[in-house]
Image 1 (cartoon, rainbow, N blue to C red):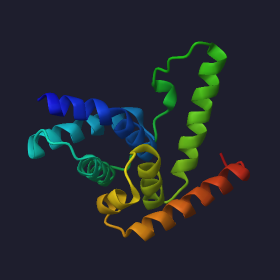
Image 2: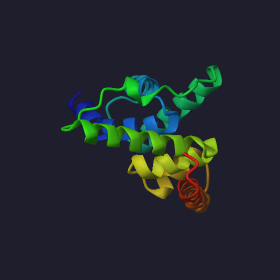
Image 3: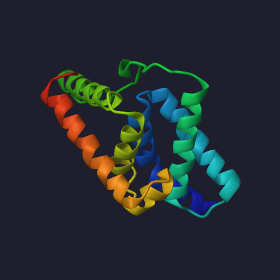
Length: 157
């Protein structure tokens, strides 16, 4: 069980970050993270494979989106910790802007980009998680970054 605890501690923050970016919903991301680790432990035991964990989490997100069309909850529902009220507002506003921009991307672009940014997985591992070729992952990430740059430049958010 110590191996799994270590695995959990190593990956929980990055997995949560990935899930928050892909869903845009703090509570849904927390639920899916918990479900992903539970499924992983039940089916695969204590050995740690980050790529497998992200595959489980990604599939749980897809299942959640299929079950119901969820709107994005406001990030104001999330308790942020900040030293200063102004800093607190600026961080929350920037986070809201980034999540809003991510929501303007196609679902597959958002998925691949957030895996690259949040997971710490290699392009090869992400290709395995998504079922795409490594080259296709690189192309999609590049295109998604260009679209985000354009969204911010045009101040669409």
